[in-house]
Amino acid sequence: MKQFLFSFCFFISIYGSAQELYVFSEPASNMPSHALSPKQYVKVLSNSRTNKLESRYTSEMMIGINKNLMIHAAATLSDMYTEGHRWESVRLYSKYRMYTKDGMFSHFRLASFAELAHSNNKPKYEELSLDGDQSGVQFGFIATQLLHKLAISSTISVIESLQESRRDPNYYPVYPYQAINYSLSAGYLVAPKTYTSYDQTNFNIYLEVLAQNSLDRKLHFIDLAPALQLIFNSSSKLNLGYRFQVAGNMNRMSNSSFLLSYEWVFLNAFK
Amino acid sequence: MKIILSLFLLLNILFCTAQIKSAKLQASGLTCAMCSRAVYKALMQIPSVDKIDVNIQSSTYSINFKKGVDVNPDDLSKAVMAAGFSISNLSLICNFSSMAIENGSQVQLNNKSFHFLIPQKHLINGDTQITLIDKSFLTQKEFKKYTQSNQLNCLQSGLKSDKVSREYHVTII
Image 1 (tube, rainbow over the protein chains, first blue to last red):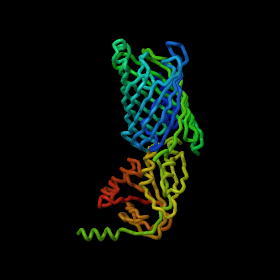
Image 2: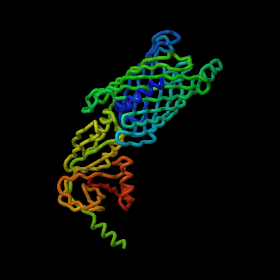
Image 3: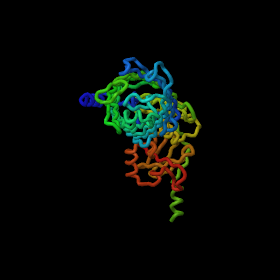
Image 4: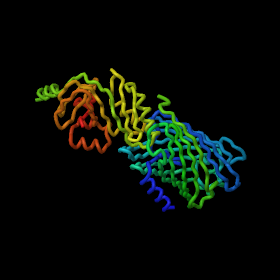
């Protein structure tokens, strides 16, 4: 895997243009001030317990409050914990850009973020996630370095599950409640080779490493997540990603999943 | 001594009827067309901006201003920053009627004060390109170069000696 990652980074540093509109993680950069960005996505996986194909639909609204602060609000519905699809969770995410150093075709940015989620689900798996699975909080930092043709972003965060079951002795300590999430992401612009118009369709590829280590139990996973992205008219994005486990010892809902999302950006949407 | 200095400064302030016609702005910290479009849309929101031609590849925006309106370079910087990026270069094309400029000359242009930092005397006439060298119009690296060669408090602060009024620092490249 190390060789694969090294080859990817080497390839984009030689031939590519950097892209940091990652599919599975957030960059340290914020969306423009006073912009609105609705996002729809669906995650599909084969449940390891039921062997059924299950899906989660998420509706998210991203808001650029000012040049340093942005907020996401999202709601999910899924059939991952129930027989049919039902509303399962809401979450709020905010990201603050703390440091910016811009150069010509380069930048370094540092951001902090906080996330709060409420979910109706009872824990069944050892992976901690606020994407609909559990109620909880998450705090972390994101550093993104764009250097000529290479854009590398790294996230580190602490996630804490706040399920009601935490106070139920029948649950604890079967499931972990605290974990560290970390990620490393890189992106590459495949087309167009030369930008001439905002109407050109952009084609980007990404590779991300997404990992979690439980703090209260010795459990972990490391996922690799390649993704494709099309950007239309410089104003909307279609993302397709596949995430699969390369190492780990957690009991997860699934070791692999697909993610399909569409995102619109409305600039100067409010004063 | 103070009176002599004040008189000297007063004599050195030139008033002219020059018009800021257009600007060439280069934004930094971006590589994608989506980011470039965000900068373009933010610049188009400025009331004095008439038309912008963009070179997405080089992140360069050629801005034409409306005739007879007040052009404020800080508005350009605020717009680019609101889009999430910075300005790495900003040049203004101004139409001057014959004028002698030397290092330290202060020129009133469209009700804005411009402080020239130039190594030698220039006789400027007609369309002339002046480059802004204040903190918000350069990369940190480039700004450092200017502050090392011009150790002026006003260049650091972007303010006149009264420490309240805005003063733009410019050079002719």
